Length: 94
Image 1 (cartoon, rainbow, N blue to C red):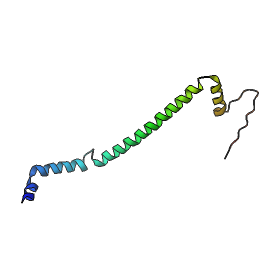
Image 2: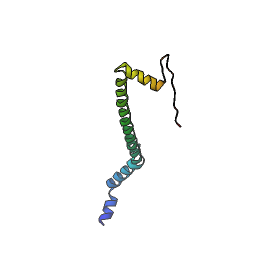
Image 3: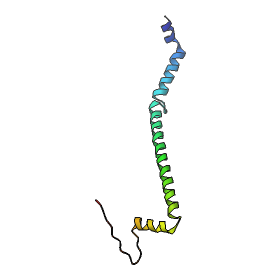
Image 4: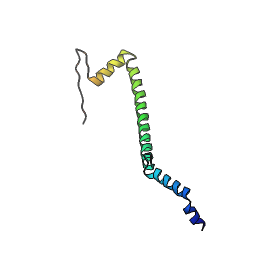
């Protein structure tokens, strides 16, 4: 008897229908919330990666432009630059 009274309660039925609508058909349902949270976690990991790369690159930048010897060494290694009377031998490993 008590169960029938609970089922016949129109406020309870309306609340359950409303909650069901919110969970399934609403724009921000459970599936959308899960997708947004996983995308947020992925973006936060990317942010951490790019921030670490930024600090690494800024340290390299300050090291290079701190003195001309480091800058010259970097240009020789990275861009294969040379002085007029020098020869460069490249060793390519496969």
